[in-house]
Length: 116
Image 1 (cartoon, helix red, strand yellow):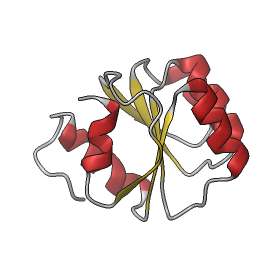
Image 2: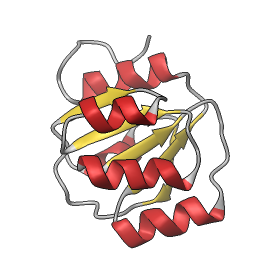
Image 3: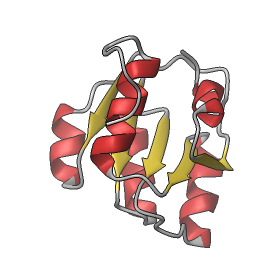
Image 4: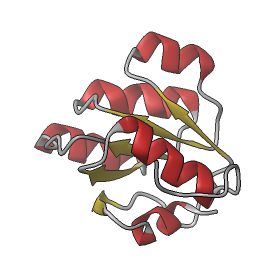
């Protein structure tokens, strides 16, 4: 799948597209940014509730291509600017991290159902 495919998932709202043609091979769910830095695979999407610009910095260091911010968290303008500068996509959703993780896992072909 590519980054822009996330925009097609029901309930996901695009806040910043980044480089929409980049490949996404995996996903990682987490809120502890030091854990994300050490364990999230490159070419992945991060599912989190951490809506601040440090999340973008960690994503850039880890080679993460997109962020999905859950639970209707609002995205501050400095986070959007950082994401645009780093070409990292940001999507928001009302879903919980579990629900969003299941939906993305289904889109990646890892599970059969996209809804928890």
